Length: 331
Ligand code: ASP
Image (cartoon, rainbow, N blue to C red; front, side, top):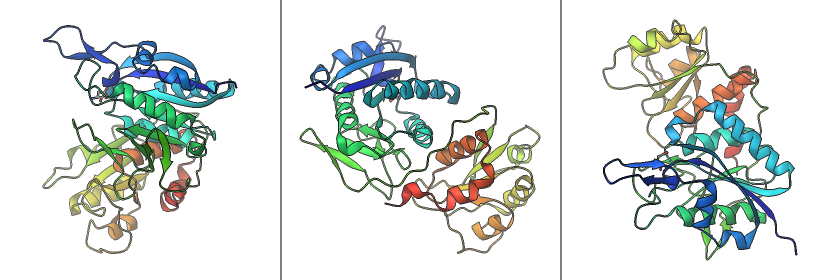
């Protein structure tokens, strides 16, 4: 029987890093082709196409580049791939996964993976993660689930996954929601049914700038006051608790929200913003009155990506609806 076709792309990150000498630290140097040889079992599972689309630390990926990766992945599906795997750095994996998930218009899975230990380290887990990611990408029960992140034996849904540890092997989690599934004795097991998905059209515009500011105790207002003058098209605030700001920030937000979309997300790392609990100046009720939108369960970084994409395809008028009825959270 014909083996299924699987496409793998390498973008860089720790999974592809090695030290050139002892003092210098590690750099992305290992190609997708070489990465594949570290997990030879993959070749027994599928007919593999592998490409190195970049060798970058993930902090230096950008939306333009991700759009080119997406177009490569779309082409692979058109050529008959039953799934696509992308390896990249873990630092921005939660953001790239969200970005792709909003735009991935296929039943076939797009699976992202990386590694916390470089290829040079003892116990490097990159090959195991790559093999797991390939198993997930090839599994029939991964279809119609959009983009998944596979790390350390767990499968996380793109819309909720976060990097919650800087260096630990178990660096990814999905606060509140938990992993969507896991690999059990090489079998791909999901813990819930696929959620309904809503895919955005490709952005026609890519020059929009969305600022992300974090509220902190006794913070000055210098940056906030200058957001409009600096030319930003949208603003996300990583706010206190359930979506709260100081009175001085709230007053400025009112002026900004008259001109550009403002999203208030929680900086806590878990849980949803409120809508109708607190009434003080700077509370979520006050900020909604002043024209801001609450992010709900979306973390500040994912909210920024949603706003960037909506503005890119001229759908910012639908922001409130997208935030309120985020159907990807209804399981
Ligand atoms: N520490 C990162 C990683 O795990 C580096 C990066 O994101 O490129 O890959």
